[in-house]
Image 1 (tube, rainbow, N blue to C red):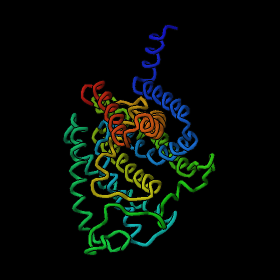
Image 2 (image 1 turned 90 degrees about the horizontal axis):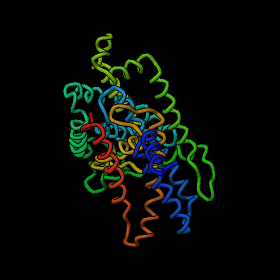
Image 3 (image 1 turned 180 degrees about the vertical axis):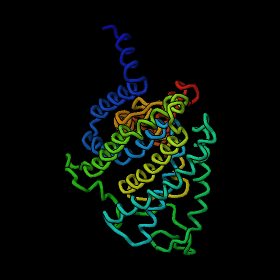
Image 4 (image 1 turned 30 degrees about the vertical axis):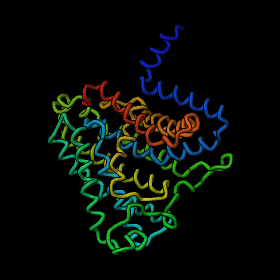
Length: 349
């Protein structure tokens, strides 16, 4: 087959971003072998990153399916997850019980935040992604004041000097660091695969798939796909958009706790600011758009994006020998993919 015809066939079927990222990933793996780097450790690290970011990427599905587009305001849910994580430490909880309690506590907090967020999005139809971005930025900045004023007393969290206000980074060692990663962990060439975290991600993918097949999920998809037809069929479009936003925000809170337990720290203040962009880039790489997303898009996009970041950074750093370019490469890849995807949907909606 003609190479150009093959390229066109692949890009038409799987999408330009997915094909390009897959090709880049293959090139970087070849480069890693040629540089004699520890590819097994890279694969293990990739698996850890996939599991820790997976639910944050999954949070994009209900918002896209319901018609509100890519959830650039996911940081609202991330903040409620951080708050629930801090409360678990304040109550002196440890281990798996602390993590699960934080997850349960984050759900009502995220639901309240998601309801308010959904109400705003229903008032600004057509500009959801723009408004969501600025709303997320505003709430993160506002919460930076909140972290200083909230009445937490645990010495593990508050500043030693002054005895008030939460620290920028809170260590989870001795609390619930890696409780999922270490659950059923499998040794892998000197590293270990985070089986528990992968299964947790798989469970939420299954629950989301079942929800999308339910009566409410079908109604939500109909409202997002064709609002006028859905309204004519008796579906309350605003309600379905609200449900999608609430579920997305709840998944953001849970996803943040999964991320934190794997990372080993809670990062407050400005840390959640750009996290929605990485999740957005991953789901777009998987083949999703601002109007369509599936579980397959989430899984494939998360694998490709996180594997690319894990493998490309050491390979490029070793090849260029000019210091650590990790953050620069991450920004180029994530923002480049988002820019490409948004140009394909006429501004995002």
